[in-house]
Length: 350
Ligand code: A3P
Image (cartoon, rainbow, N blue to C red; front, side):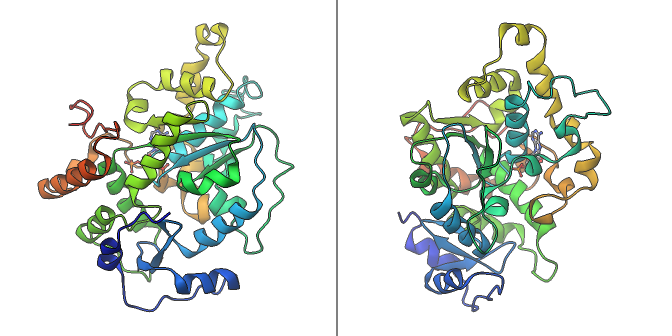
C-alpha cells in the first residue's frame, strides 16, 4: 500500500549514504538498502516502509511483530501518532481495566497505585520499542495477564493482518498543528547530541510533505478513522481536544468500549472522576517518577509532559504556515468527515 507521493519522496530525500546501524539484523540491513529514504529528525534517515516513514529499528520491530504476534480477543492496542496523547491514553486505559485490582491504592502509601510510581510507558509496553524491539524477534508474551495492553504508532493497515479481526483498538488523534509543535520540541530534546537540530521551518516542511515518523499524518488518521466507522465495535476513535474538554464522558466511553463499563454505583461514588484525576496532566507531571525517571528507549520521562494545551501552536507557527497546513488538511482530509479543533476559542473545523 503506497501512500506517499513520489514528489514527496523526492523533495525530502537526502543524498548522504545511510549510516548502517550495526545493531540491526542482517535482513533489516539489506531491506533498508532497497527502501526510499528521507532525512530524519532523531536518526539521520527515515525510510518509506509499507507506505509510511519510520526509523530502522522500528522497521525491524514491526517485521517481527507482523510475523510473531498472536492476538487475543481480550488484547487492547492503544494506537497514536507520536505526541497525540499516547502517555495519557496508556494511563487512562491501565487505570480503567485495572481499577478493581487497585481500588484502594490511591492514597495508600504502602501499596501505591502503579500509576503513582511508574510511567505509563512502563505499564503498557509499545510493540515497536519494547515487546518486539529485540533483534532476535519473537518474544513470549503469552504469560502476560489478561487483558494485555500494548501501545503502538503503527498505522491501521499494518496492524490489520496480524490482529486478524481480534483485539480492541483505541486511537487518539490530535490536531496536527499542536501535534507537530509537540513533536518538534520533543525530538529536539531526545535526539542524539551529534545530530544537528532540525530548524522549525525545515521540520515543518518535512511534516507537511508527510515524511516524518509514522507519517504522512493524514494517512495515519484516515486509516483509523475509516476503520472506526466500519467497525465501531473494534476501533474506538477519540480526539485529544474533546478529551481535554470532557474527560469524564470519554473515560466512560473508553470503559464501555473495552468491556469494563462503570456501574451506577461507581459513577455515583465518583470513581470516574477519581481515575480522571489520577491520569491528569497536572497530577502526572508532578510525580517523582515522571520528573526524574526514564522509560521509552531510556528517554527522560520529564519530556513527555510539557504544556498539554490546545492551540499552543500559535506561539510557534507563522500565519503562512497555518495556511499551508490548513490547505493540506483540506486536500487530504476534506470530505472524510474528520475535522479538528485547533484553538480553544474556535469551533471544530475552523
Ligand atoms: P505538549 O507537548 O503539547 O505539551 P505523547 O504522550 O503522545 O508523547 O504526547 C505528549 C503530549 O501530550 C505533550 O503535549 C504532553 O504535554 C501531553 N500530555 C502528557 N500527559 C498528558 C496528560 N496526562 N493529559 C493530557 N496531555 C498530556
